[in-house]
Amino acid sequence: MRALPLTVGWSADRHGTGRPTDRPHGDHLHGDHLHGDHLRGDQLGGDLLHGDRRREEHRHGTHLDGGGRHRAAVDTEQQDARGEWLRFAPVQPLFRALAAQRLAVLAYHGVTDHRSFGAQLDRLQRLATPVSLGAVLQAVTERRPLPPRSVLVTFDDADRSVLTHALPALDARGIPATAFVISELIGTERPFWWHEADFLARHGGRARSLDCGHPSQLLRRLKAMPDPDRRRSLHELRVSADRRPPRQEQLTPADLLALRDGGVAIGNHTQGHPCLGRCDDDTVRAEITGAHEALTRWLGEPPIAFAYPDGGHDVRAETVLQELGYRLGFLSDHRLGPRLPSHPLQISRLQVDSTTSTRRFDTILSGLEPAYRRWRRQAVA
Image (cartoon, rainbow, N blue to C red; front, side, top):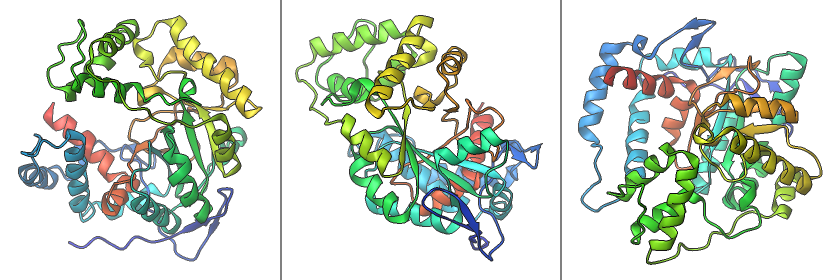
């Protein structure tokens, strides 16, 4: 069955304010809410999707291929392949139409494919209403829903590609965005700790608390550790490895100002990107307040938005954010949310990558791919 054509209902100006066009239908939906009703993943035409899932899993295995490519690359191919056929699922038009009443917040990291990223932004211009962080704040403050088909573009960790690749593409199209930065990396040449750990483990690094095994499993084990154990294990990996990881040039305070002047708001992503759920109360407070103070000093104004490291909500973190005057907080739960966020410090986001195929990009925006992923987890469990 052919999918109904995607239609454009809104365009956006530089500041994220939408203006209606004469084409009426929407293209975003939260897979769990249809006009206030709950739709679980297992209600998506289960028999049909189950058969498609078996065929898709048969074609795309979950193991590394014979060439030893990294699992992440294989996972991306699998996800894109899934998006190829999900776009033609009979329920996709329904998801598109109802998603017009949801807020889609896209959570990128770096931009590794500027052409694909540009194509994604072009689709946002045709299918959605790009909005700014300020527009989301105004909606929360005034208790007035954002326009239909609203989309906010965000970046976590904010490596230099946000400045070199994302900013020119965003600026050329007048699309605003937000970058959440790790403050202790600003102005340094230090790699992200998860990149460093992976490199060290692949070059002989060992730690007493880690059964290193295959390096692809290392990050999962480090994230599961209490934060002091994670830091100690990282130190042991550094001491025991045969080589030091290559330097990674990070953004500078001047770059943060350039991003802000170019329409990319700057938000807090903690000092060192720990898993807050594995931290004690004092560490949670220090990670947030330390980054807050540094960003305020560099920007000349306090940040108002925060993204939880690894995307999970933490009650203690929310308490600190409220004390510091933060107005918006973002998760990475791969969901769409209401156009008027009901919990401004717990706003849902969709996980997306600059290399995501345009067809899968469409199914993410519609909410079908996120709902299907939740259904798969329920089916396996």
